[in-house]
Image 1 (cartoon, helix red, strand yellow):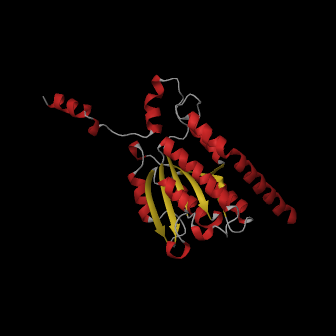
Image 2 (tube, one colour):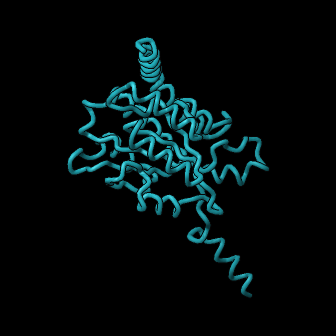
Image 3 (cartoon, helix red, strand yellow):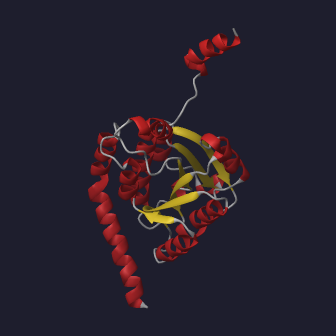
Length: 245
């Protein structure tokens, strides 16, 4: 009798466990021709992309464009999103276009902080609450500013806690562009993966047979031209900084 009651309860949708798209793929991979995702437990961290930084940060519009691309992907793929601001009273809120799109995603937290790192106790508690099955560590995608301060300290803190970190190079910046390559090198040396938004999204997909692939490919195509220009300019600046030395 109890067994029959238990089965009846499980049939009701309100009691069915909810899984992300990535976890659903893992559950069906054995019976499907679609390959399981390479990045199976992702979270998107958006660090301090605030209004007052718009004129101070190198290539700020490019950082916003990349972040919007990743937010759109997070919406499609049901990736949880974490946002912080640094001293919002003085430096303003996250830019409106990012906030507007973030509200359409699985936004876990939008927190103000004084700590340079995003890894405040409040954020870490939310990250722990929203881990995957079995409490496995997250694969955190990080974008924001500044590369050599808040973003780098966030990355180091996440790595120390055992999470994998993917730093999206076309989604990070600093006031002084010469700080960027040094910060990226430091984060890579500590164990972070340095990638681009396009490379990351296709790595997330892994297989063009996925139902979301068309949407993600269209998203990449929409921003490809602007991202190519941004990366070329970044590379030129990086090269020139070494030439001047």
